[in-house]
Length: 532
Image (cartoon, rainbow, N blue to C red):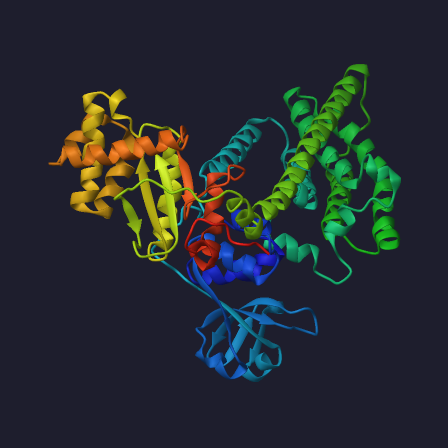
């Protein structure tokens, strides 16, 4: 998890709320008001987590629950949110794992608290751990250990694999921002002291050579080459050659170690603790070889070619992978920036109002709060493949905002071109709403989009209906679509304003709260309101 959201995630865990932390961070950073409190509140709401930002005076602290998120100004630094836990008469918060009294808490109190509540609503975006992310690495490690156990080599050589493996892991940790590795432990370790910062050192390019290749590149190439060449020469039953070349590599690394320490100490004036860990691994390797694995230098043209081929292949593979990772990182940053613009409500509102209102056809199918002034209408066709996604969006909106808005369903069906079985389907669908109500209609409609078995659906949901009444409703809706050139479904309308074509339908989820709070949409008449 990132440092910015660590307190929030810890608070959510204390409330037994599971969430996809990477997705939460992405959605929060994509909010047009990031990094304001509003971006956090809206993102929590997007994840179906009931929440609220409250103004709480010092005298009211004891009224708060045992766990909460509070804005505190610690050590005269900029105020930020901390996870606070009450234990008896004392309060514990995440900063340096301090336990303070009520009086001390009041001294740093900034009167703003965020509270959350676990709800029974199914969170479709909650954390879903992919079993493959654990199975494949575990299988790989297990197979490697089994293979290593069958090698007829000494234990000291087998144990040497520990060095390149830990070296590769440390190299990945040093490039955690590039690999997208997020760990609270790594963040705390890298910023253990005021003069330490792994990110500052790793991303620094004060030396021109770093624009081409830097210490992190050399580190991951060095240890990857070690791992693969050792494995290769063991398979060739010629591990002595590996250690001959490896000694040369280790001695060649010594000047780079000195340069790295100089760069951190003198140039950047910051220590990279992961870089120092990598240096320690290299020095331990050298000591291990000198003490336990003394080999005379062995080489020939063939072995030099093999060793050179592995180094070249690893180097090429790394720079290709690095280019892909950099591109992926830039794309994510661009996506976050573009999403902030796309999710800007004022921009959306201006696009929504750029065209006049369109008087919609009559439809008896209204879901949610029928008295609400906010109406989302969708023109749909059950036999349209794109309409399934549209109804999933509407179901999410209705699930969270059933009392705050209404959803009108208009069905575009041309009975002149339908066979008898499909006509029966449409009549039953309308009759379910008219005779059984909203819940049965939603269940039947959802079942249709999930299975799309016409015969079974009719058998399951068949009921008496007024053919003349229902056919006239469909005829009027179909004629409206023809008159208004609505040839494609689904089509969304918000209070009879056509949903902007420049926005994805999924984006509607981000604007629901603003639409509910907005009052310009409930004006009478068809004239456009004046925008300021």
